[in-house]
Length: 119
Image 1 (cartoon, rainbow, N blue to C red):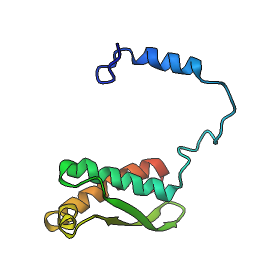
Image 2 (cartoon, one colour):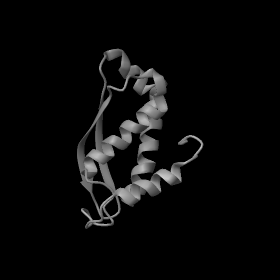
Image 3 (cartoon, rainbow, N blue to C red):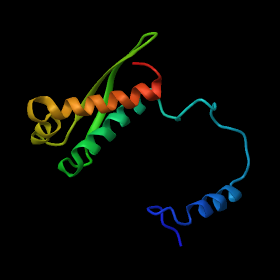
Image 4 (cartoon, rainbow, N blue to C red):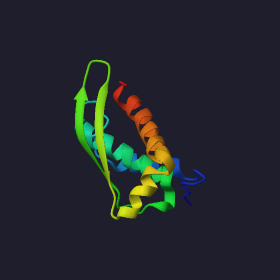
C-alpha cells in the first residue's frame, strides 16, 4: 500500500523506480534548476502565488506573462502582466485597495530571490 499523504510506501516506490531507470549522462548542467527559461520560470512562480493566495476564488485560467527582464549585477527588475478571463476577475486579483496584488507580488519576489540569488 502506498500513501503519499502519510508517506507510507513512498521510499519503496522511489527505490523501485530508481532501479528501473537506465543510467545515462546528465542532460543539463548540475546547477541548472530547470529546462525552461528564467522568464517563464518567473511567470510560473507568480502564477503559483496567485492560486495559493486566491484558492477557489479564481479559475485556473489566469495567465502571467513576463514582459521585461532587466538584469543588473545585484538585482533583477522583472515586469509581469496578469491576464484573467473576465473583467470581474480583475477586482479579485487586485483585492481591496491593492492588498491582494501586493501580497502576490511579495510572495513571488521572495521565491524568485531565492531561485535567482538576487534581489
